[in-house]
Image 1 (tube, helix red, strand yellow):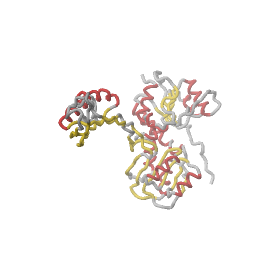
Image 2 (cartoon, helix red, strand yellow):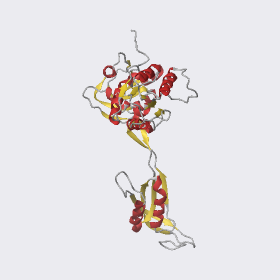
Image 3 (tube, one colour):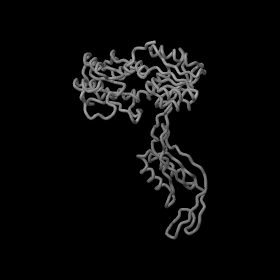
Image 4 (cartoon, one colour):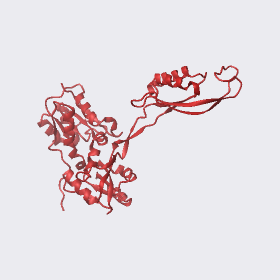
Length: 377
């Protein structure tokens, strides 16, 4: 039996929720994790207005995966007074679960941002140096312990700390760093120093020993350090480890083209890849080697793209003044329409979900469409 929870897990495997922006609302929005899915298909769509909800009802859908979260900001009532409320209310009445990946899908490996970056490439061009414009910040994963040990005792202290869980980096254990120096101390009459005599300034050859440690193992590691260390009062520092940026995950992407292109050439490739009639170009008339992209509305990443060496930025929409500012800094802008830069990925998302959840049918909405469908020349 396939449950709503299993569908949520499959979606999270493709678009991990921890990659989403802080302001976003992703994952299971409507439904019970333990509720079984019906035999109907799962409808994949960009938006969930009333007509798409009607399509889901007509198809007998068991759930809807809507890229844009239909519940975004807090809502105090669900009355059907707006198109989004109408669609959501119809799904609730029918018992259909509703899920959304949104910016988690943008940031994920092989996600929407990476796909959009590759649409800027020429046929057969693999591109290079593909990385996130705003890298995901992975948790530092614990602390670093620094202590100072007489040279002849350092192996015993290292082994004791390692046995308590310190010094693990990936598949390696007992990882440490040591550096020689001189320690000084003077104990009062109540002390019993392991080296030298009380009441006298002592200088001892010591090694600075550093080992990483998971937070959960910190208490036992410090106890092991104290037990193995020869000093009555061993000195140590506990240093929190900061977040580590992961250039392969995060918002937006930058990619280096195999050959230099013009904004016109990149726009032509986008038109074909996205299947749209119109692409807007604000052109600096320069040649382009590195391109920054962000699906949807990406103006917040223009600065990061320019700092990364991009001389062209591709997104769905930007304001007049945001575009002028980019041009003034030597960066061409190509705008293909907000959902135009997202919708072609929906069949790919459906295929990936099929592979992750066997026995469940996934279909792409036929009624989901961009709000602007005509251009009058």
